[in-house]
Image 1 (spheres, rainbow, N blue to C red):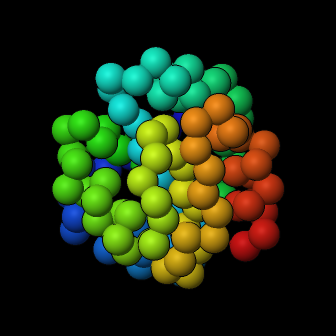
Image 2: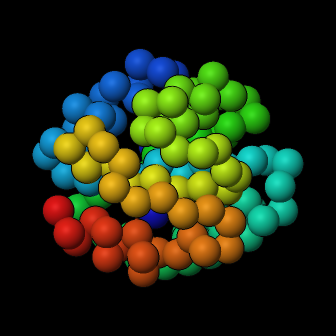
Length: 111
């Protein structure tokens, strides 16, 4: 799996723009949370859908980006949390142990 680091609010606009072409996946990770580490490890052991780009956000280091995501997509902040962005909108989000690659792949395939 290739993670693209998400570190700036400007990148968020790029993700929105790219979501018109193919789904974009944002994974919000807390480096202080053991559940985040378990979920990230679980995701990395599975094959991601090729049609999507995957972004990794360290929400402790980049809290402003995490807040911008919550505001932009009208989703309540969770950690860990995954969002699927399509055509500029969040079409799917999940958190904690409910995050899994099968559900992400299902959402990506709806594009």
